[in-house]
Length: 236
Image (cartoon, rainbow, N blue to C red; front, side, top):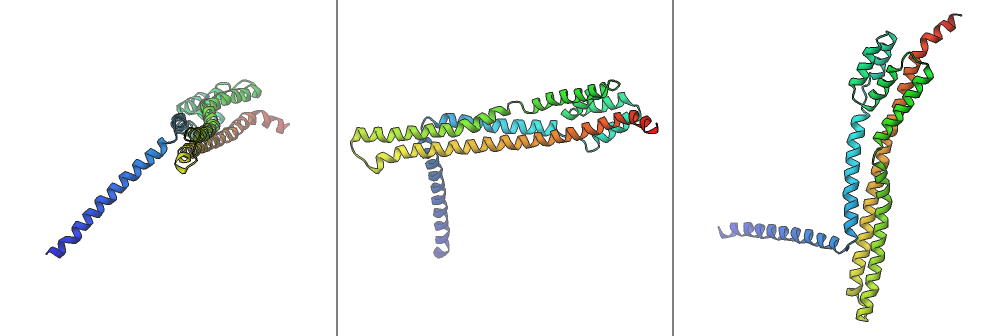
């Protein structure tokens, strides 16, 4: 019986030891980040700001650029049949950037084609500006974060030489403190910069896909409006 109970005790002891080791490791990681000094505070602020902007813009762009696969086909059919009000109401009910562009364009039917094209272009630029709102801050963060890390690097080097001047002795212990600050801030700044840079360009890719879809739909819409004027010309 005693022999059967011993492994259970050993297993429990090993589990407690592993848990303690994990807690010690997480504490050491926190202490390691804390050694980065005061520069880690603005880098942390930039990190959370970048995450907020990326997720906020992602959900806005995703919802506003969403378009029904049959959207332009339904618009074309309604316009071709003369149901202008139905087409305008259908576009308005989409509650998307694409829907607002074509709602204004349909409302201009009866005007010269050039004016309708100008309306699509103007409203499209307004909607694109709404999608791109605050994205410039991501570009700023992508540039500032590595520079803040570089400031931490300079601060760490200054600290190394200052500590050496006070102790009048060069040792690993004196140099290590400055190296912690130098390397941690540099790494953190680069990581935040990469996150902001990547998010900025991924969001731009989503906007570019929406712009292409808008241009294709606008071309097909204008083509429908031009058909009645082109057909008599072919009869002649």
